[in-house]
Image 1 (cartoon, rainbow, N blue to C red):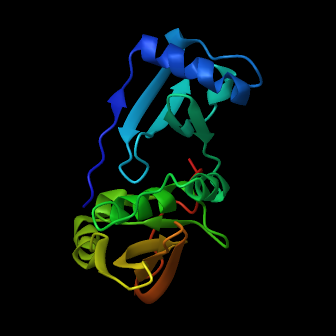
Image 2 (spheres, rainbow, N blue to C red):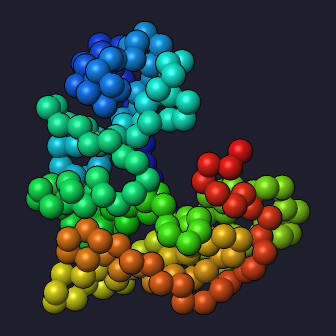
Length: 204
């Protein structure tokens, strides 16, 4: 499983970042004293950090996500547009060390058309509507495999294998990452159907 670590930023760091983000908050800046920002390195975008912002201001009814480096902010909106725009600027670094992290990042931050899709690397990634019995949980866990790189072709496309949850079914999936950063997921076979899971990323 790919591990990711967030670091909580200091109030001074928050204040600096919030000033740069002011244009995205309609010209006003949330209060650094009541805003929490968590930062995570993203090696596929050298120099950038993935930020998760939350707080008591009206801007943060839900957590806000952004890619940031000093002097540059790219707000994330659950579409592929901000990522493709950043990739077109030449910010993306794809190689055998970064491609799995990039695929996981992309699929976590871009909502699929036609239904909720999520990469599942362990049973703990599943948002259960109701907790399954231990035996059923073990059965699900036994068929899940982490995302891994299978090969790269001469055109620079990366071919990955993994598992995805689409609506209420768990699938073995083939994930293709193209040189421009586009990501395609193809369900190869259904592993388990009708799981008692939440149907949508934003469902509480």
